[in-house]
Image (cartoon, rainbow, N blue to C red; front, side, top):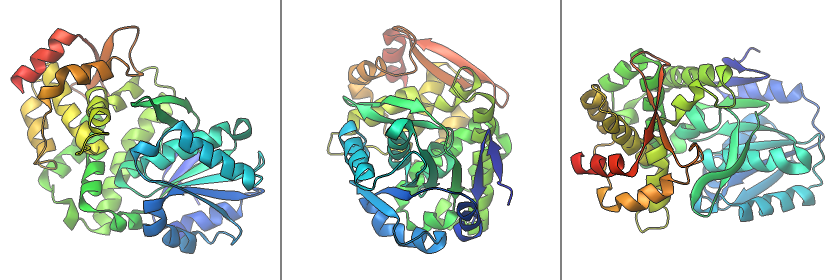
Length: 348
């Protein structure tokens, strides 16, 4: 049972869970198993997963509140308390069933429980299938800044089942398309062309989704395998994220929060504009074909800049952005100052 992709010691399987997960779990020797999920996923996906996985009835299930607001150390304490109540030892397995928040937070809790237990990712959103569940970046937000506390720790496996996409509302599915677009722009011109030709993702068949998932994941898998700790080419995966994370963080506590994908889509356009990339027109129109009602938040320039100053990718006081070069997998890293950032909003 070979995985679709292999990154170091772990594999990524794409397809029906029942075909891949059950043989894999039967070959393991974990002392106990817990599932970390959230309230939304528990309602929409948990029964599907339990049916397909064939896990024992005594599997511990930990349900946390859904949403980025709960990606905090306080929630970690709830998960750790549940792990203690379940007497999870160092030979237990933690299954993170959900989107990016669950993958990040559940993985962080597993990586720090008794100095680390094994965990695997079962992503249920398009965003987590193509990006968040792969690569071993784990952590939580702190004082309003995304992913300020965390570790690098790889999962023992990732299982991507496109059936979970049927549980997603339109806005959440569209959010995930931002990472697919990003992967196309940084590493797969054929995928980029394919996306531009068919932006109506609600009409994609299961076979089409499988094709897109494999192409998108292939880009991230190659980059992570080459640069697991973000010392070089992996910085490409941050395209759109320096400005995008600031947008997401700023609007998180407002009446109109932005999804991760909406924020990153705007971030990619803004960062491409910032460096005067000649492909700006094509990139802007391509992204906006998936995000037609996108708003560029120019009225909060200084607030966004203050958040960007706390970005974990910065070196000293230098705010850095990573954008793709002219060829696939080429990276350009640029230092941005406040004057450039303010000018950016005067021309967008």
